[in-house]
Image 1 (tube, rainbow, N blue to C red):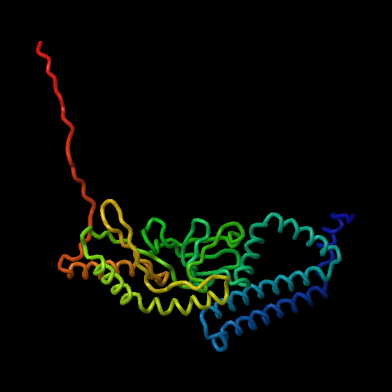
Image 2: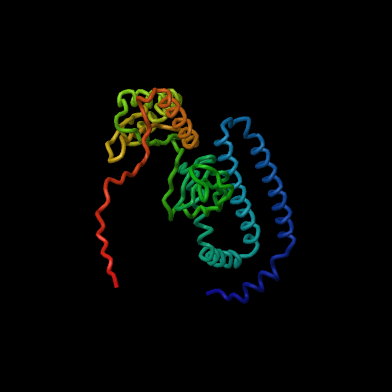
Length: 307
């Protein structure tokens, strides 16, 4: 087993030599050349990568490779002049890797995110309880612009969330936009008993088809790619309408496909246009509301005692 006291002494006594100084100068020259090459390649990426997401991904991978090569050059510099230093750095490196295993796992997560295309810049994802749009993917953490939180529906809360990349191995990941940037949503409309059901269906479906036409057509082509890539069946993209009988009203349920970022706005437009058409139906279709009717009250027998 090596004597570590002799190793430390050899580090301070033998490391600074003329040969080491020459290697040090060469090291700095290599670092400068490496930096210039990587900088020029990054800046010129716009010439051969036109798509924004591909360019972003390329720059992140390039940055990661730069640090890997830099670490490699540094290790070569400090180990080639001292045979004991290699063992020393190996032992220290193993201890650091164990102490910083969460950081190491996050770096592995960074590689996994890009290698498996788990999510991309701009995707809307949910990791555990955290939901938001991806605005940056770093080597150790992913940055999200929070959606929801204390804000209702799919709106930004204004908070920025830093999520360690190691979370991808520990939490479920929901991606709202990968491969298929659409969602199925639904709205429910209470219609009063006695309304013209056929006219009600015509009003709702006509409005839905007019408002959602572009989303329906775009979603069909996107879903065709999903069917090719995954073991899923073809799905209906056109608006679908059913109704259920309840104690108080006839509940119409409209199901439709919408862009994952337009869900709240499209709900508002559908409600607005359907309500407008119902108001123009001359009373043939009426919206229902909850009412309470007291049918009868039990008789009360009051007996008064006179003293």
